[in-house]
Image (tube, rainbow, N blue to C red; front, side, top):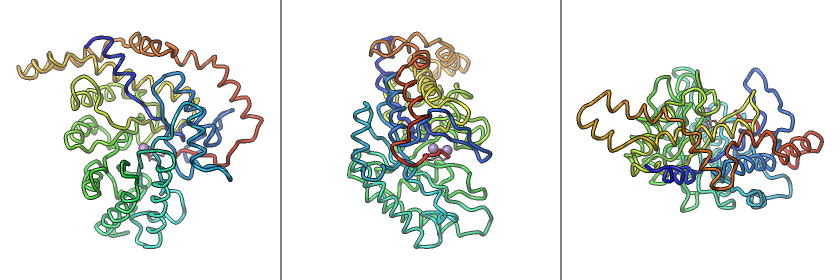
Length: 394
Ligand code: PSV
Ligand code: MN
Ligand code: MN
């Protein structure tokens, strides 16, 4: 593949940023506020727009409801307009069905029909926000599950889940997609109602064609082969997108590509393989990270660079030669093709990709001396926020 083709492919891969990754976040042991950090939906959009300005590949920002809400007197249409004025758009709408005290025993799986009704009403509210903002994605993650054997009836919970999500699905715009995210455990520790890709997949089959599986790279058991899941979901037409992040232990939500860059490369290899062999499969590429000790905008820029690095390396795989090795049963030869690509230094390609569209060759270096970012960080430390709501990430 020519360098020009690689640069074009990199520019054509949009990476969505999570609003909550720009806000102060913490663990259950505490949070450490960052001076000048984004405090409301406006400021999160400003920071997402900065990342787009520096990288050229982040045109949308996902929002989480109600972490993100328009202030009194403003509407979601106003927020979408503000995003546009900043050069970005609202991306996936993420309902929050896990923090309200009513959801202690679950949201859409709760044994109490009144609480399920409340959860469905929230799904419908988010479907309306999709219509107003022009978002095409309703991204569902549930904290539903149980902590003890016998706590609730697993079979009944599954049916409640399907029935409630079906109502949310029906409320979406006709061209909207529902992304169904799974997670092995946490906050539930005995069983989780959407625990793995198979569970999400079968639920999507019940919901309809526009329901697809969302793969969050931090949500699996250790040593799970995520690229195998990706290849399978593409083959079945049910890969809906990614929440990229990295981890060493559980759902650490660290900078993607910081701990397991080779795994990320292997995921992109399957994304290209499952498509036309030249570009990655079209799906929703999103980051889902919470930055606790690292500077938020810097962390997001680095995450984007790491995703592009993995993609560029995967694009370098000599697929014709690989196919020959595979047919010949040349195990070491086939593996060497992948390794050769992985070991290539793609930093010059990435720099050229950005310079061609008038973005800095080194976005992190540019960020360090960015006057607008410095001005905003200073202003936020003295002026009140435009809206309320800290928008803390989980
Ligand atoms: C849950 O761990 C999750 O991955 C879901 O995507 C949530 O929306 C997000 O994290 C909140 O940080
Ligand atoms: Mn996620
Ligand atoms: Mn997560």
